[in-house]
Image (tube, rainbow, N blue to C red; front, top):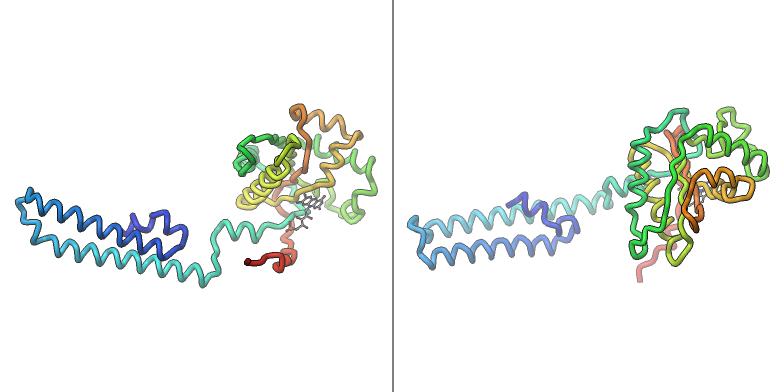
Length: 262
Ligand SMILES: Cc1cc2nc3c(=O)[nH]c(=O)nc-3n(C[C@H](O)[C@H](O)[C@H](O)COP(=O)(O)O)c2cc1C
């Protein structure tokens, strides 16, 4: 009984009113079944004698369950509604320094799967992801970007002794393209956040790079874009650099005044 109530869907909603309703409904249903059995007099073990005891035990269990849920509810409120998803959202930061350590392909694939499980308009799934972990590709494109757009790359990046590439030294890249149409740009954004949160949950860092996407879609980088073999009509929106973090930046303050109850 306790287990069933703990796993009832309303428990997740944290709504104590609905939890109490579940408890009450279970008790009424139990009493109803016992009354019918008693009425039919099919049981030779004199159900009328065990009915009050069973009902009392049931009521006790129900009260215990409701009490537990109430306590959990209070605990949630005191902690300020924390859970692993909220922690991941609040902890994730853009990482611009990575260790020289490759990321397992299975893990990269899993993260991309999380990406394409994002909500998307009409479930049209008009998005494509290319995972690039080939150092030659990454370094080649980085060199080309430095030659073609030196003004776009900050000197602080290249003067850093640990500088390896213009993708902030990322070991792998997720290149995301959509067919620009209706709501697909929104779909792309949601996909990207799934990728970044999933990566974070595995101890990886990420940084969404609009500047690298701009370069990839410029005439100078046509050869690199072609090599990614996106389908006809798909346009690259951003690149997410990924790797094991080599820094732990502080969160940039958020303006909470943009949130209002009406
Ligand atoms: C669409 C988009 C484009 C971005 N482009 C760049 C970029 O070109 N270079 C960069 O260093 N960071 C880039 N960022 C990362 C933002 O600067 C970063 O998300 C923002 O400063 C907030 O910091 P946080 O991610 O650590 O919370 C981009 C982020 C987004 C969503």
